[in-house]
Amino acid sequence: MAGLAARLLSLALVAAWLIAPGAAGDNALHLFRAAPASLRPHAEVAASLSRTGLAGERVIYSYAGLRPPGALLSAIRAGEAAGVIMFGSNISSRAQLRRVIGQLQSAALSGPLHTRLLILTDQEGGEVRRLPGAPLLSERQIGRSPAGLALARIAGAGAAGTLAGVGINVNLAPVLDVYRRPGNFIDRFQRSYSSNPATVARLGSAFIAAQQSRGVAASAKHFPGLGAATVAQNTDAGPVTLTVPLVTLRAVDEAPFAAGIRAGVHLVMSSWAIYSALDAHRPAGLSPVIVGGELRRRLRFSGVTITDAIDAGALSGYGSVGNRSVLAAAAGEDLILAATTNQLDNSPAIGLAAFHAIYSAITARRLGLAGARSAAARVIALRAAT
Image 1 (tube, rainbow, N blue to C red):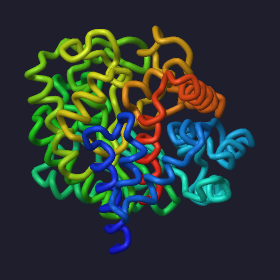
Image 2 (cartoon, rainbow, N blue to C red):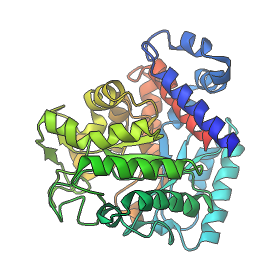
Image 3 (cartoon, rainbow, N blue to C red):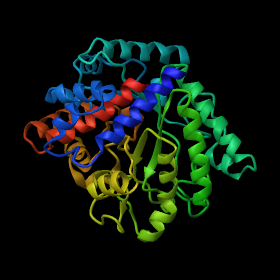
Image 4 (cartoon, helix red, strand yellow):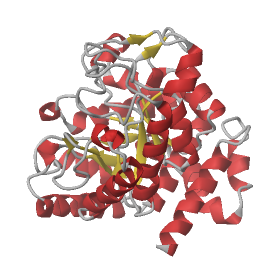
């Protein structure tokens, strides 16, 4: 446990250094070399990566079925992948999943970085669980209990135990959205702790701390918050615009994320809704104003940013998977979740399309080399810590 704590502290220090003023500018390579000695390995690796490696560190792959296809294993061995997300359709038993993850990690360890992949899933609790087992209670059940704080800690620890036991090292949880009306988009599946931002902040932070203390990274979602979405406003299905006033957005929706950041959450997932008070033209995950400005600069988040599923209906007006991926990377998203909202349609081709588009954009200088190195270094630091 002491070794894990040291690695997580190193991760936090690396990330904080990487978003220091000027880190994304033309002198980024100098800043890598000037980093404290204990942080240099991650920075130096990122600075030495080829464009192939830089693009690969941005992509989380998915696939359909119980066996990882050859194309995915080849991409991993070539250093063209940062991780893989697991859905229910990929799992028949804990033993089967453990074998598959072992196969994926063997491929990664034989690749250029000799570093383990990020293996992700959604183990929120209640109805949203990819694996049987903890956490059994939904966020709503925890939030409504007088013993909510203790239950949130138990849920975080339980999620870590369930996932670590099969080799999953990133949980795309907790949901930190503050629901407005019972039965709305985020509440209908009991995915929100409360309509009170202070309650969401307290319970979400407890879940994060308990889970991460047991070696599984947490991801707070869906920034800057989907709690105002009505039951019909589903970003998986189509475009969604939320007209929440800026003062409310910051005081209510963003407050739990600020608390989660203070608790040390390692990842933040962006929403695909448009927030007219911040950026009336682009969904949050494609918006430099929201990812770079609101999340990075205003809330001082120094960890890894990740998109929601890149094929979501909310992005129907933004072209191909490749174009969406480049826009997300340009906005400041470190990881592109190359998955479809229909698990049966998942294919490594989605991840490969994201990879090739980002590679081409870096090569053509449509994505800056310094920014790509900063993103890769944050991802490499997370991979090393999990």
